[in-house]
Every structure is written in C-alpha cells, then in structure tokens.
Length: 254
Image (cartoon, rainbow, N blue to C red; front, top):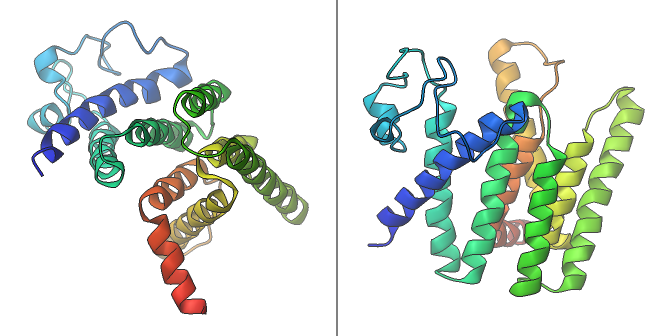
C-alpha cells in the first residue's frame, strides 16, 4: 500500500508529459522543447504552476498569466495516467511486464485523446509504439513471437473487414484506417484471441456512449464519432479485467 501514492504521483507526472504530446503532435511541434507553455497566451508555465493535478486545482483550471480556462483534459489525463500506473503495478508488480504494458497504455492514452480532438490517429505514433513493442519483445519477451504476429494480423484483418463491410452497407467510410492500424499494433501486445475481445469491448463502449448521447439529445447522431478513444479504453479494460470478463461470459453461456 505504501507504494501506491508514489506510483500515482509518478504516473501523474508522466501524464503531464502525455498532455504535451497530445497538444503538440497534431501541431507538428517538438515534444521536448520549449518547456510547458499556456496554449492561449503562450507564456512559459513556471515550475510551481506546473505541478500535476495540484496546480490545476489551485489555479481553478485557469492560466496564471492570462486567466483563460485550461481544458479539463489536462487534469483528466494526469489522473488517468496515475491510476493506470497504480493498476499496472497492482497487476504486474515491479517487473518487465509492468514497464512494457504501462508504456503501451501511455501510448493508448495519447492516441485516444488525439483522436478525440482531431479524429486522426497518427502513423508516427503507431510506428513508434510498434517499434517499442518489437524492441521489448526482443529484449524481454512478453509473449511468443507467433502469438504476437498472429495477433497483429488478426487485429488489423478483422478491423479492415469491419471497415469494408461498413462502407458497403452504409455507402460511406464507417471506420478509419487509423483504427485498423491501432488494432493491428494492439494485437501484437495482446495476441489474436485477446485483441478480438478487447476490440469488441471497445465497440460496446462506443455503442453505449452513442445511446447515452442520443437519449439526451432525443435524436439519432449522424455525425462522426471517433472509435480510437473507445478502442483504447476497451484495450486498457481488457488488460486489467479481461480474465474476469471471460470467466463471467463463460459462466453465462455454459
């Protein structure tokens, strides 16, 4: 229990960096320099105004200089990353798997929030994640190579099939290629069976969200809803609770 608070703080600090990535990558800005700055007035954020979670709360979600509101995304990402780090430690303990799957989920957070904002999943982020996966599998194998490669083919192949069927039925693009590539890379980490369950979970989350929004607006949404955030959420959910989900499902059908 004593490790939880330091791990949460570490995760929130990493989350602060993930916010930098989420903001700068779509703008083709360096994620390393300059230091943190206000997205409105562009003035540098001092160290004492850049403490994850705490500074946002003390400043009431506003810039210390221009007083413009700062998106709630910043504190959400910091809390989410801190929580994921703690859960990953609880699940994997202090091991290579903890590092590998924590980094995997950090990438998913960046991908999900960027897709939510821009409706795009960037190839350079997916390529970086895939290179990390190959390096990790080479240095400290977390699965069998056959399982990883089959998972990659299954994830990408099934999502591509869904995309083609959706386009044929709806006469318009229903699933972006970014989602197909994300499922493929995620399949490398999860394997062919697990990526199917994780992707299905993501679709369920997306459907539930659409139904909730539609019930509030009392009209059917015809606009585009990015799947990336839900796919990322489904994968993270499966990583921590996938075994329990499978057991519950089997208990219902058997």
